[in-house]
View 1 (cartoon, one colour):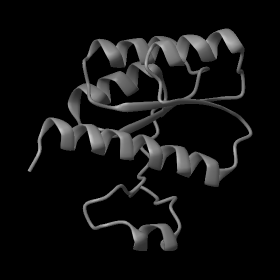
View 2 (tube, rainbow, N blue to C red):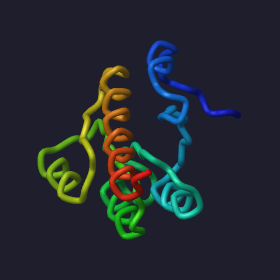
View 3 (tube, one colour):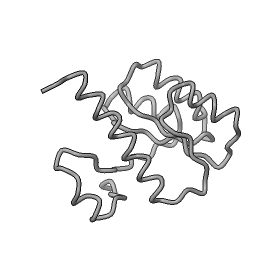
View 4 (tube, one colour):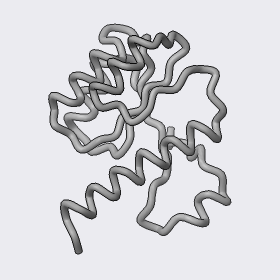
Length: 126
């Protein structure tokens, strides 16, 4: 099944052709997410804290160990201040709690993508 775009048409029109399009690739566990990240490049990853096998914090640690240039958002229905602080210390772009408005999530994904894009441009100026 092809990925669904969850950005509005209005948002997509204002982005340049080389810009961010949100194309979800759901993984069933933290392990499968890490495996996919080892095999392919992703600009932004949205992780839940509660997943089968490896939890979101452990998955974030594994992503950081890979040294990938990927921004990570944590989205959870099981939020706690200590977990939020740990996620941010580990380098999560943002920590959101469910329920989360889709516009807020899309805005945070856009922000994470923009941060990554800015870093890419700094590292590889044209």
